[in-house]
Image: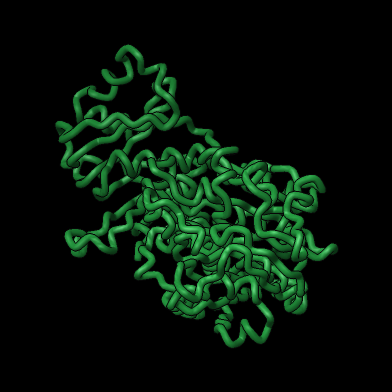
Length: 491
């Protein structure tokens, strides 16, 4: 599993610059003003920084731009990175600047001469987020030493305290990425559940419901998805009780399809290997629960994930079958590749029946249609209540995680009417992500504020983002953590 880089905060002493080894970072403002450490580096390198600042085009450098001087004269460092950074920056700008330093240093130990910039903790979080690599199955990486990161700051104790809760969130993001990147022969439903059980060590109350328990509860929709697989279906429950006793929790519900072949409605072979990420919603839920537990959030939150594998076999659900949900509604299965909503609907109903949540948010890599509509920049957001939805959108924006609200309506709901059952599990190609949301809305009680997040386009991507290498992004952990912090934590 990936681990956060060892980031430590130390006293700021530019006099030590000449003897620093590894990679060293100094800061220059967009106007070319050097701070104390940069001036010291300029003297040691006999005016190299001054020449860089005076060079044509420097004034056009974007915030966070890094220029690297390899083996700088007068210094023991392997490389000197000069980063353009104004003194006053937003948290997002600071994180992106930190992430750019990780790319520039390419895995080497790094000392950042941060001086007195007020967002040093956020810069460190950017470093933590971008310092990720999924090397679990690369034999050459086993003995690779971890890079050490030092943030030198005039108020290093204060910055270290500010970074601690951010580090908890970054750990949650890393956990989500690990789960989404893991191959399906390793992260089976049983292994996923076992790893969730391990989270009891950080203070979460864990329960695992097995197939007999799910059958007794009447979760016929969820169970029909996994009946073609040798991997047993499960529901994992994680409770964090950091709020007032008896206070209704926020419920987070995740789709955990550890591999999705499409079932009898078999997917094309090309690209099917990417379906290891079809448990992305469950990955975000476990990562968020880890973040909340590690930072001791003062809120009650319950995370529930439905863990199944969708495989074709002689025992698999067929198109045309009718199954019964825990709610009691019957569902005509038109397409076995529209399986995520079948998993979610039963877990959502169970969450409401048992926990009576003050709000419920489900997350799923649910539809390819949302990628057609929003690309890989935004998750689709569907909701039955403006207050909760607007709170989430605000949280997502503040954490630089793209999210866009989509419509709901009766005309879309009419598309999933069935001739022989209460509903169909798909309304066809038109408005595919919306009809999927309408299906889920049928399993939301009238008094439950609810958000559905379709994260198919943002959970895993083909090229690097600001905060992650290509592959799993961990999208959603930061936004959900911020939502809990802003709307659900006790004062």
